[in-house]
Image (tube, rainbow, N blue to C red; front, side, top):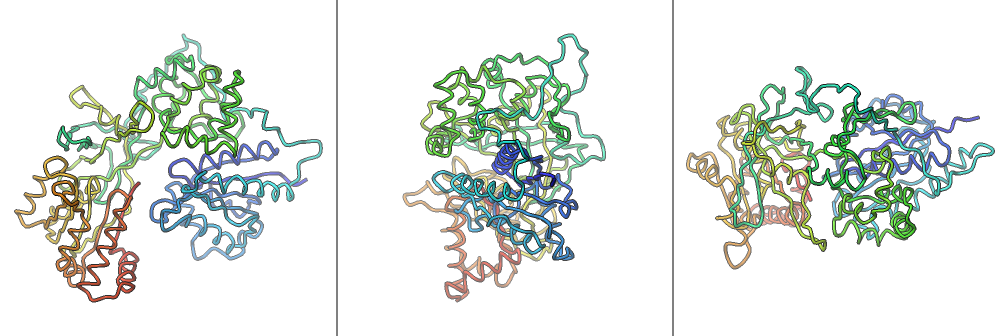
Length: 596
């Protein structure tokens, strides 16, 4: 009898691919498969040649890049010396999650599918290309594709005699069982945030507890947006970084939300528990201490402020003792109910905590051991580092907009990490923030004669502040910055710092204050007005161009402005200008880091 084993490997940045991979894992269990679900980088890729059946679920990030937790796998897979037939016994399928508003839509999934095929793998189906832009989200593609996939897999691995597919009405066991400790059991001492041991460079699994040094608002009090310049002390952390790198910060839920959550679920925040995996071979959540209190679990681990996914409502429906609530939950977790779910959850950005309020009978019946299946973990947030070690030794600074906006819900929406960081006051004692650093996408030239053109509207200027501080400390003069904001008097971040560098001859600065005059002026207009200088830097000073900021219309408008420079000053035709800009991108002379 052939072993019925399935491996689901995911590469996920925001958690959607992981959520989908776990859904496939649940569907596999209902079909009596032995199934493992793992992040690509925690899987030993050398074992791939022994696998018979694998489903890959992968997202595409930013400029067509693989997510962080599959980068090592990606490098291994594209090694030139892998023999062409090395995966000839592998039956596989690739499910991609992407966003068709980006040029490299589902690039990673397409490339992965093609590469496994090259190495001899046998595709069960064409790659699925889920699209965030679809009215029903990626599920519009994923749902029918999964039905077809199970038909293929069950044809190869039929159900063992006497077994049926476990009905969707039956609740699957939780991933972990939760055992409460007696109130009087001895407490293991140990701070929950221990400074990383010497020699261990801080990472996601071992963040460094950095002291908050200052938290300063850099927009006028009358300005609609609250932007902060925040400084952390990283003395003794072993962290090193250069301009263009990114600091990862692990946020936490606010005490009011934690208290509300515990009240809703009738949990005692001070109760201590240990977790045991239900199935052998399942590892425990890496970031949770054992034993752990309910308060620590809810504060530092469960993402109760995220917008809940379809899988949340599906699992919740099993606990419901109230018929009305159960029907609604089942509708939200069905393929037909996705439009309804979108307008209940995604459009107004309703949080998990708020959704639990709307289903009170179900919520108070949730067994605590299902919490880790029901609610995803809090993901770290990435910020461009806005300072250089050469100017600020042992310090990391970030420039952060506090996320706050209105939807049709009465309470304003708030970003978890930015709201938490903004609330911290270094004058109230020793305030610590868990962080680590990772390599960023932007690399700045080391040659002192190479000029740099930086285009950074709004908080997009953060990585350029780091680069300018670094280059000035090294005596590099060819620094040109295009900065844009709304009003000179309200959100011109670091104004005095830029003006001092202009006076000293280290910086050429062009500003666009969009609301300070009748017609709106943006960075792209300033690029066109100064096209002679931009062309001169590009053609005779080998300048590198960098772009950072919000990814709505800005990147396309800037690219168009640069193409106009190439046409009007360089005499290129429109198609040649476009080709030239693409060539600059390929040779890393035009780099961008944008976010939505």
